Amino acid sequence: MLKTAGLVLAGALVLGTGAAGWVFWHLNDNIQSVDIDSALGDDRPPRAVTTPSPSAGASASPLPTNSLNILVLGSDSRSGEENQELGGGSSAGARSDTAMVVHLDAGRTSATVVSIPRDTLVTRPSCPLSSGGSTAVAYRAMFNSAYSVGGPVCAVKTVESITDVRMDHYIEIDFSGFAKLVDALGGVTVTTDEDIDDESSHLTLEAGTHHLDGKTALALARTRHGIGDGSDLGRIGLQQKLVKALLEQISSTDLLTDPTRLYQVADAVTGSLTTDTGLDSLSELMSLGESLKGLSSQEVKTVMMPVVPAASDANRVVADEPEASELWESLR
Image (tube, rainbow, N blue to C red; front, top):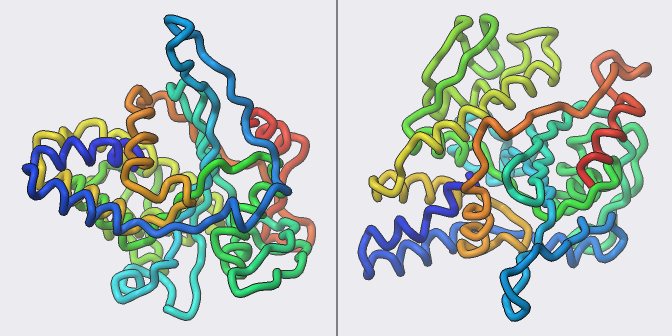
């Protein structure tokens, strides 16, 4: 997704000068944002230390090198007819079904994607509300309740509270946008290790390699009851397969030679995004995407936050310590 954003301007130029201005404006206007920094203030973990890289001469601007941590959520927050048809929520509420902390190393040559099970019991901190006031601290609350009660701001604050890692950016993509992205890329190829039969996600797949369209790929990302023990942990494994498969599909698709497909991909991405204000323009997304051009799918490591079953509820999990803290420490 981030690499795709980095190709958008080049693609716009292929479409012609007159069209480029409209395309840029349209794609830029697609993006929604939340001012998370202002909402949370200074009571947060410190940012990663930025160290200057060597420059050719004293007058040259040193290139900053610092790692980045990005909270990526998959949700049904842009509720509407399309999301509801794909299994999303009603306009009365929204859920975060997927949560990943993406850690990009300082050189942008490797990445670690850490999935946080939505059924993890956490202490949810008090979060500021856009309407004024704040939520109450909640103990032994489900992790994904943070988004439900306080939106992106509370999701970020909760992740920072349990990890003590600063989230430099926030990216949220909705159900219908994910499906459109997969379709715009021509589908995605995924290999499943076991048969899947999940009535809830309406997905039936035999074990093996499948080329999936957007709707089926989304069903795979949401499947939990048809695999393993039916918990969120099995679904996380499928989601991580999809992340790798999407990276490989983007890398193998020459979007710059196909302006129509490039526009479809860019429109699908930006039309489904909610970001923090540091990434809420096409130029900023392009800059981040360009910085990742040297990152291959082979250098993306996918892991899950270590968890164990909760003593109070077999259907919930809690962080497995000290392993969980050691993982988060490696990302600071």
